[in-house]
Length: 271
Image (cartoon, rainbow, N blue to C red; front, side, top):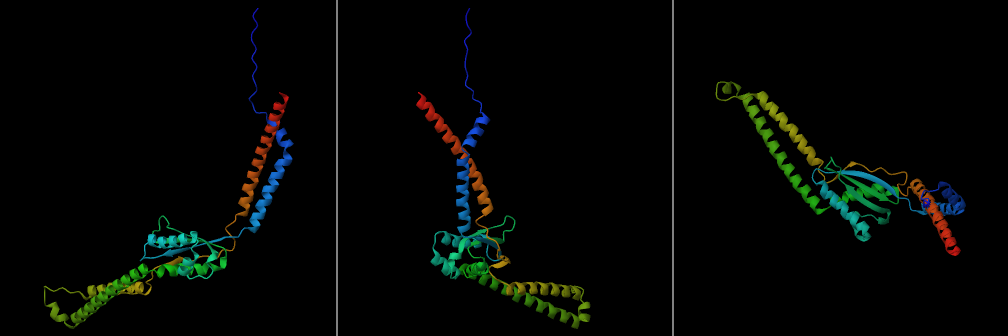
């Protein structure tokens, strides 16, 4: 009678109990790694320089937002390249080392606005740097030239409006003085009420143009920067949480690796 051959299979299933025994056996190692990681992380959080973040918004009806962003990006480039002497001369700030980062962004649906973000070592210099950046933009030769051209354009418009108002007022006076004579002419139809309305409209536009001229500037603050009370970096809670999770999994990995190494050494010695 022919015997049926028997086949033996190794179990490939993961034995959770063996894994637990390995973790329990190496728990001192896992705990030690966790403590060491946390210790270094806590030390870093206490000795790391706190960084404060603040934002302000610039608007301009003369300079394009892309042009303003280009100026801010130039400052950011000098800061990244550590060309502090040039940056100091442009911003006219004594302690340039307080600035860690300057960046600019254009809101999606507000193309005439620029959001400027600053990261600083000291929160009390926020207003000083905000003013320095604004002055730097307005003192650019291109900006001054655009302001000059806009001012000349507004002055011409104002003079033209004044002349039209004077002409209409003279016409209105003439109509009132010669009302009987003009009423006998069928081909001339002049209504004083319409002239008064036209004069009123021109005066309103004149007032708007004079206001634009008085307030004409290259770049102005739409939203001022707020002096931060708490640092934005380092984010201590987040760093500690990430370190704890990372250290725990690294400790488990190292425990399994050492256990595998020990079992492999035993199998090699038994041969």
